[in-house]
Image (tube, rainbow, N blue to C red):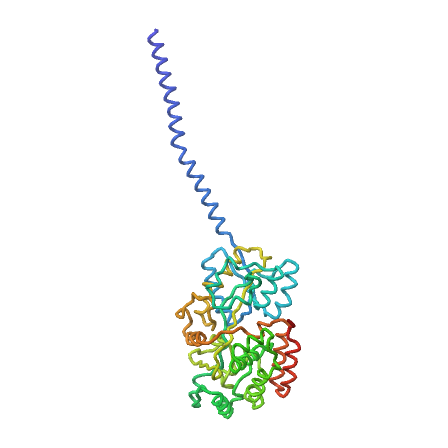
Length: 427
C-alpha cells in the first residue's frame, strides 16, 4: 500500500514538472514572433509618413512654348520627389508688382515659389517678406555679378534661374540666301543691308519692332547704347551717374537710332509674339529679340543672328525666383528653389527654351544644339544687366512708354530724353 502511494506521488510530480516545462518552452518559442510583428508595424508607419503628398504652387511669366520648356524642369523635379506635386500659374510681372505687396503685408502669398524682377525681390526682402538663400546656394558657383540684383547687406533674397541673352538681330538663313544678303561687318554695311532689304518685294520693313508694354523696344535701344557707348556707359546709366541728355548718350540716339527710324527701316510697334509670326513668314527680314526666340520658330536650324558691328557687350537677363516666408511648406519650397537654381538649369538649357545657364556647372554639351553657337558668342563678350529691369519701378514704365513714342515720333527725341532724366529715381 505504501509503495502504491509513493508511486502515485512520484507520477504526480512528473506530471506537474512536464506542464511547467511545457509552458516555459511555449513562452520562449512565441517571443520572437511578437517582436517581429512590432517591427513590421513600425516599418509600415514610417513608409506611410514618407509618402505624404505636398502640393507647391509656382508663379512664373511663361506660357505657350516657353511654358512647355519650363515644365520639363518641373517634371524632372517631380520625378525626384514623388511626394511633391507642382501647380503652375502664369502671371505677368507687371501685374504681380501690384498684387504681391498687398498680399505680403497681410501675411499671405499666392504661391510658394515666385519668379519676379530682381529689383522687386530685393525690395521685398528688405521689407522682411522673404526667406534667404545664404545657406542654400553657393555664390561662387554662379557667373560673376548675377546675384547682385537680389542681394542687400549680405543677404541673398532670391536665386537665379536661367538667363536670356539679347545678342542681336535674327534672320532666316533661307531668306538671306535667296536674295544674296550677308551679315554686316561694319556700320555702313549694316545701313546698306537695310536699304537692300527695303527694296525686296513683299517686305513691309527691314526690321520688325516687337512690342508689348514696351520692353522689346528697350532691348534694341540698349543694344545701340552698348555698341556705341560700351558696358561702362550702360552701367553708369543704371546708377544714374550719366543722364540721357548727356551728349554721349544723345549722340547715340540722334546719329544712329533716329535716322533708321526716320528712314522707315523699323516697323511701327507690333505685338511681339505676332511679330514673330509675321517675321517668319517673310513680312520682315530682321528681328531684334532675345535668345528665347529659338524655341518659337518652326525650324531653328534656319536661324541666323548678328550683333551690330563692333558690339563687345550684351545684356544677360536672368529670371529670378523668391520664396515668401508665408509659404505653408518652407522646407519643400526651398528644396524646389534650390533645384531650379542648380540642376534645373541643366534641364532647361537642354530644351528649346533658348536660355543660357547662370550656374557654372552647366557645360556646353548640356545645351540644346541650336543654342550652342549662341552660348559660345555670349561667352566671348561682356555680360551686363538689363537697364530698365535694373532701375525698375515707375521709371521702367516711363522708359517703355517714351520709346514707343520715339518709334512713331522720332522728331521728339529731346523731349523724350528730358522726360527720362526727370523721371529717373533720385539718389
